[in-house]
Image 1 (cartoon, rainbow, N blue to C red):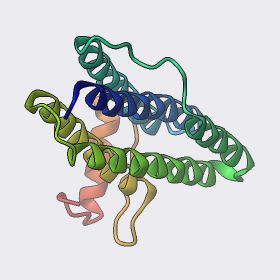
Image 2: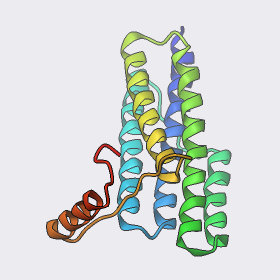
Image 3: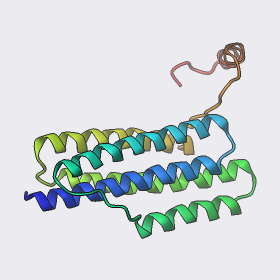
Image 4: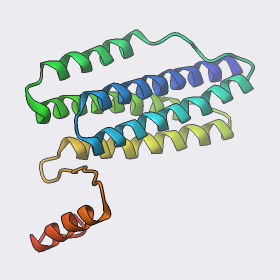
Length: 180
């Protein structure tokens, strides 16, 4: 693959990472649950780091990372804000925000899958595969946060270790399986 095609692919990945960073920050602002907010901001920071790695690779090839935002990304983030505002109650707001995060994750996975099918130099392919795996893991977690038919991830922060220990004990006393 020639260098210009490689740069184009990296720029597309860079844009999707920056969109993911902004998207996770918007979703984090939309939810009230402190634990969920921290988790989503962590994902935003992860995307920022991935974008920086891609920026470095782009610059290493003698190009500059794109500065413009994608129109689709801006529309999607606006949709998150609108839908979250229209939701009634914190659970609905959370559900709407997480649904939009899932849409963003699915888009990122598709872009990365297409990039991995291209003949990238080995060191760049390794970077892209590493990013893809991180996105895949986050996508699974966001889906679990959203709630699957048999499963839902609950996120809660505690102010002290004693409060956390009390919550764990209550789950154990309620016959909640530890592996669940």
